[in-house]
Length: 173
Figure 1 (tube, rainbow, N blue to C red):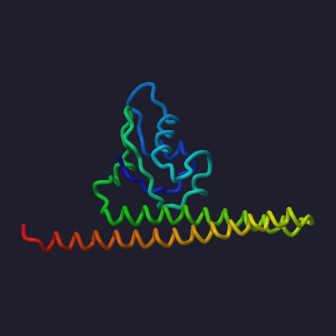
Figure 2 (cartoon, rainbow, N blue to C red):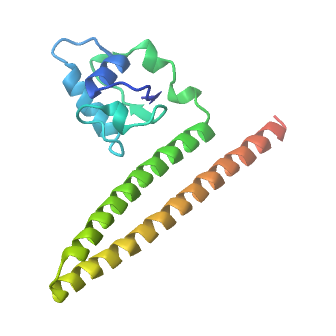
Figure 3 (cartoon, rainbow, N blue to C red):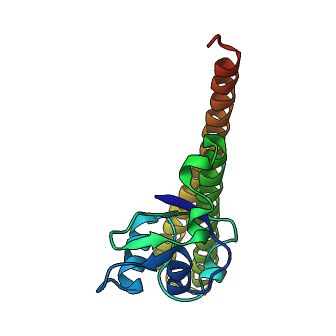
């Protein structure tokens, strides 16, 4: 397995070809791309316009694929060479990015819902939409709280790793 930092490839096929070279007859890049997408369920790797979906630098896990080798681009950033704190920070940034996208979608939906509420004249229907809007507000608050807790957890994990590294450095061999 390798960790790759997204560099703006346009499609999953482009990304797959950048990371892998096929060594086994019968294997194709479409199948490898499916394995790559499956290894990264938190990212929307399907379809076109990856560069519009993912920020450059997003951490992508490149799984070992039977019948394919990693290219030099993929092998340049192996998991073993990345400090754990860097991985934690990168994963934390990816989680925060996904949460930000979810909050944006939630805000967009809420805006459209409020527009609908303003256009409804039937009070019973209007009240149902208001209740739905209130539930969305609670969900947004919960997501914001989860985002904050996630950031705090990542920070504590990084600090714990720093302390562990310091203890190991100062311990007698």
